[in-house]
Length: 229
Image 1: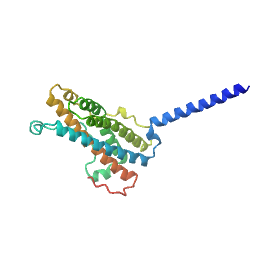
Image 2: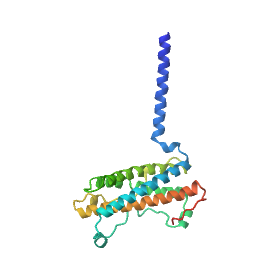
Image 3: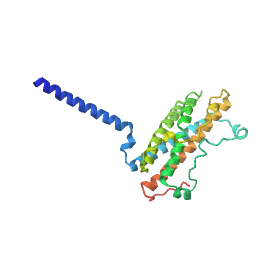
Image 4: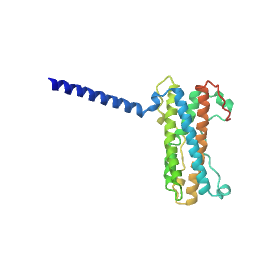
């Protein structure tokens, strides 16, 4: 009888331990679900700001070591593939745009970089002469964009009274630069990397700026100074 009770107690302890682990894994797999909206804005601003610094570093290193000055006269800089996404251009548009529409625009920009950043990482890490730091920052940029995207989607869904949106079904601008990025022509290949670095730096700066504007609106009730526009 004593042995049976001991085994039952051990079994109960094991069951509780397993249940606790499963609960922890569920929470850890979706950390944004347990973070307050205010804290989530603070975290996303920090992430976007750090990602912009990395993007600027990668762009600067590529521009110094690989970009060709002949491009300025021989080539026309293409529009970034996200250029068609409407985002506010001045303070008046910022004030007129609803928070959920603002978030939706930023999500469009962020998700449009999921595939291009994967290919940018492959191109940069395989680039002869590129520093280890440059390759690591490219990887971090890709990973942080996904973290930012998850946080943005959580914020967007918290503004909705309806069922959560399935963002994978949205129609995002397509990136058509893969052929040039994989070109055997060195000049074409390098120019494609340059444009990816240039455009991501531009777009993550937008995301960082807009997140700061939204944090000012939502968290600080517009009681802060945002004079980027």
